[in-house]
Amino acid sequence: QKEVEQNSGPLSVPEGAIASLNCTYSDRGSQSFFWYRQYSGKSPELIMFIYSNGDKEDGRFTAQLNKASQYVSLLIRDSQPSDSATYLCAVNQAGTALIFGKGTTLSVSS
Amino acid sequence: GAVVSQHPSRVICKSGTSVKIECRSLDFQATTMFWYRQFPKQSLMLMATSNEGSKATYEQGVEKDKFLINHASLTLSTLTVTSAHPEDSSFYICSARKTSGGTRWTQYFGPGTRLLVL
Image (cartoon, rainbow over all chains, first blue to last red; front, top):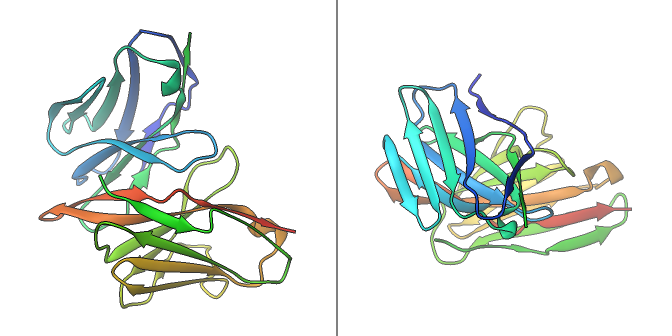
C-alpha cells in the first residue's frame, strides 16, 4: 500500500514566522513530489513541484526533498494570514495518478 | 502553469436525474484526466482515471455504471452522475495531467463542481 503521511495539524504560526510542513512517503520508487494548497471550499492549487534531492525555492516557498529519508517538506517564509489553508503533499511514480496525503491545516494569525 | 476549467460550478438536481460535468484543459492537451470527489472536511478521493480514446479506470468501490466517464478529445472529459441520489451530493473535482518532459508530468485541478441532490 503506497502511502503519503502528513500531520493533520492545525499548525499555528504568527504572521511573519516560518511555517514548516512535513510529509513522508512509503514508496521508494516515487519520482515526483508536489505541494498543493487548498482553501476551504475550493479545489487544490499547485504551489511547487520537486524532482531532485535538495532545496527548490520559489518566492516565499521552499520545497525540500530527501529521497534517502523519504521525506519532503515545504517551508513558507514570512507567513501571511492569506497562507491559512490546507496543504496537500502528493507523490507519484511515472505513469500513475498522484497519491495525496490527507493534508496539513495551517493557520497564520495576525 | 496550466488552466483547467469545469462546468457547471454548481448544480442542484432532483433525485433520480442525471447530471453531466465537463472538464476542459484550456491551454494544453491532456491524454489523461482524473476525477475526484471530496466530502466536507475530508480528503480528496480519486474516483477514476480518464484516458483519451479508451475506457476509464475506476477505483475500487466506485460504480462505473453510476459514474459514466467519457474522454472524447485531448481537451475534454465528462463525468455523468446517473440517477443521482442525495448521498451523491459532494464536491467533484477534475484534474488534467500535463507532461513536463520524459516521464514526468504535473496534475492541474479544475475549480470543482458542487453537486446538491434534493
